[in-house]
Image (tube, rainbow, N blue to C red):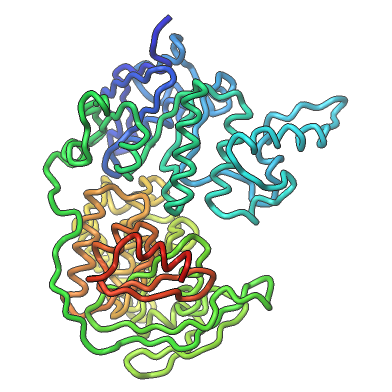
Length: 507
């Protein structure tokens, strides 16, 4: 019997106008942790979708052998029946069902048409114990944080007797602590004989857990490394990913912040459903011209809720306090009003809040700036095309055309469209919430460069980031939040990961 659980031979996949994969070959050993790396649009998620039946067998060329037999999957259910499960970057849980219902959804047995619910509640506890989720099985999934929902997805995969588990950017929405726990869990699966394939842009995590790393570039398999024997480093991975050395992750910038351009005093935000609960509690901070100001803290600290409430009252039952921009008091009642006053916002949830997925790239980029490219209510289509092409080239959006529907782009290229939309609105103050989530290292550097260019032009940026190296590498000052309050403030010169964590946890 072969030592390989998965053997891919010369796989080619085409979409209209673009070849996403070209003669990709890859072998994955039984019981190993195999990582797949590459820039956005390199073909990683497409490859895994071919393997798992998301794309049916007749839609691609080449062979996929699973456990020594050529596959012929026409749906995800076909692959799951053979012990192959995929967990996508965007979670696929039903938010209004309970944990145990999500775990067994689609493969519950019935007797005379009746489901034994108590049986599945009891059985779900076994899988929750395996993944380390200490929640009642009856808990509705929407009440859980993203990290816990990720564990429910994994429990669901395990309930199908999974032998090969594919995880697409499993830690992209998690904080450092949750990421650490999930990586430890994947290592434990390896000890139990489960093979894992991880798609990830977080190279430090890749080197921590992976036995083997395969790198894709432009839809082709470039190289495969044995992590220990080849003494693999982040620099080696990056060079193969982008086809060049990437020596400076955080572009250098001369920092000379000027006068205060934004000030928030005694800002309090109440929960949208439980009106007496303060999600943000009496926060005050200021932002200077030509400054990148970072907000760090654990998930649930209230950072996103704070910024959304400032940006057009987009979160909360109500908010109280004072907001000043260039010395003038504001209380925005809508995002449109905020944008009109020179305030921009890039959401962490690009699919729900940042994009219209069924529209094309050029339309999405122009949405926040229609007033600038319209006359008498009619959009100047030539200006729309010119602006979209400009940002397509500036941010290197991988697409055959700006007429491409956004939902057909990779997650990282979708994020670039969101950034383009905000940049086209030309804000004086830009709030960026996890600006590089799900983006490869090359694209991250490009976005950091764009942020630095904004600062050089006298703009100001507030950045929410769960990646501490990113905050330390880009910010002039850092506010640390937890439990809806600011726990401390650090200047760039004194900030370290240890100090940030200490302030978040101790204050």
